[in-house]
Image (tube, rainbow, N blue to C red):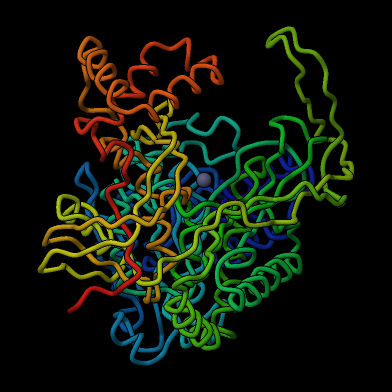
Length: 613
Ligand SMILES: [Zn+2]
């Protein structure tokens, strides 16, 4: 068969793909055949304008960001009644952040979508720009949807908000080996932003301008589900994609039921199309050792899948397997996007109703125990896992045991799976809310507003009923996302303190109560305290010279026989104390009025009584 010239690369790619793929995926085959079938004798210029570099190269390459900009405009020009191409932000290097709003419902802005009661679906590619399957799969799926080749009727029932590349500057740090454990495309972008932020650690603290733009987009559209498209790192095995949804283990109990249904339906749909999906992230308990098993869990809210559950909305993490080649991965991601859209079309209205009911329940959490973090228990079960034969042998390179996978020998592993996910950290919500002192009102207020958390500024002084004090507070040794995180152990205690005018009152009685507790409860894994935003409060700022403390000690001992007895008892019973001159002097300094009573006091307070309006 003589093929038109432009499609030779497609065929070459296809055969190259077969060689690379131990078991060619039917999805990849179908995708390549559809690209071939779509080749008209004389290709229409408009069709060419809407095909990606990826498609034209047989999914060997991916385009640069200028292609996203051009396609965004071209899609709107081709389907002006169904597509809006918009900028939703600007990156630190000055590039526009592009979003395509796509629907055949006539509702192409948030107000119209919400007024019509239409479910909004957010699909984002390239949060890690080297994992760029979502961009090319998304454009392909969009073209099929809009031209009526796939998913008939889906765009009538929902609004798709498609961000082809979230980490735009990272996408333009283009190179051949940015993902050394990933098969294709030939060159790709970089994991983090130009400022070095990993956006999938930034959902709560929102340091990156890109994340701030994304949170504004999320707040405006309020999607029923946010789909985050990635490619795994890690081991070699035959499963080709992992699909996780929350709420499933975490968040509102009724939403979990619907969340599991959503996940299972997408997995079933993918399986029908020849994929071999997993419902959990395939990383081993002990790195590089498959025998250690896999622990399922709930991502903390710094991650997309942990974040959306805090808003009582669905978050889905899609991870295609990095050792599948690019044509296969794009095909699976394309199938996933369409499978998700079928679910949104079928259940989106129910989900809206469920999520609004969950919002109402979240506003009633005052005084209840709320889980802030989850962990799989030690309970395990054995599951069949589609792996390869492997050996673990000593390596003369690394000097340690190293796993070697043989991709020519499929093998079923009897995998230990730890999926009994239980609460790890809980906190009782305050009866009324939190009080943020005036000196932190600007910074904390800006972040709360970005997340859509409601609060008000108090015009007069306000009494608090509880304060959190740390018994231990140690900054982590290693910088994390540019932060010095704080490990603090402490508790809320009844304490009468008064904050001056200009403090913020953040009520628990609101839909985003989980989210605000995730930011303001000190023990929450992504709290502002945990990210080191209040480290000043945990540094000792004033000291008493030892010779002064010595005098103070003698005065206190002479004045207070009970204290003298307590000191003597402590010397007898606590050898470490007795051997530590500074601790012995601090024993007295802490009882002196010069002692800083705010040392290790978390500046945010709680109140059990709603402040007057
Ligand atoms: Zn990723």
